[in-house]
Image (cartoon, rainbow, N blue to C red; front, top):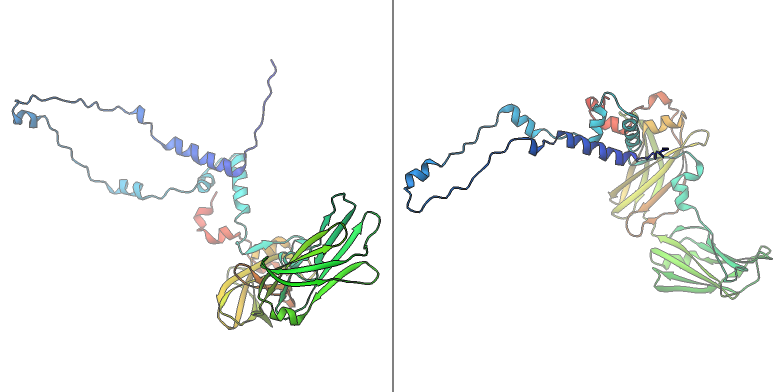
Length: 371
């Protein structure tokens, strides 16, 4: 008889839980395997002398706990991952669990490895996107976008829209925009103007207008007279409460990481968020670092630490470059400043100046790292 064998692929984290469970089960004593003393209920006649009843009562005494027993009680159980590390002959499953665990503890949480230009988190945050909606018969469509996603009060912003058909791009149309603040308060209603040749319509919200508008999230609903097409775009207006001064400094830390400090000027007492991606001298991305803390008005040095192993993994020696910085006042919503373009270069560090340890290895005692 032919039998079909089904192989199951168990995720490493589930396997870790299973291993810990079976290890615990092996250490749990079998209560049924030990002899149990039988207790029988004794009935004493009412007229039986009290002395004979007392003679049958046994006194239970508690034995003092010895030092070795006390040590066993107070020992803290080791984690499942440490139990696997302690196994001398590890199976493939053990190795997979350890590898999966290491991938989550390679860098500190403030660092993100960036291996491609399009994955730069700062660039991705500020990147504008076109939104398109088609008509019911799918023969026409409206596309809308803005030139910026984040501006300060007192800065201009432009809305764009275009009507296309299956036969022609950039149809002539009447397009109107209605701008709402926090999706409730009607701020502006105005027609878009046609731009020459390409069939794109636009509306510029002036510096004078945004200087009077409150900070927060805005939504512009753009409507065309063709097939009742409509689309919406959003943008954020923030108060100019944090900015770069242009000063910076860098050095290697005692733990073998690159520390880049940027000086900022703060206008309000609040919690702020700063993030920047590090690039090599050949314009290859390495990774990003972030900082968040409450700051008082005045000038402050913002520490952005790029983990040594992350730089080693990139395989690129210095000098290193920071092209742009994300500055924001933390809260709901996050009030981001316009992207801050910089051209910061560090000293020409070599790769052997950076630590080759993982973040977990730097945090744990040496003895706990032994396989």
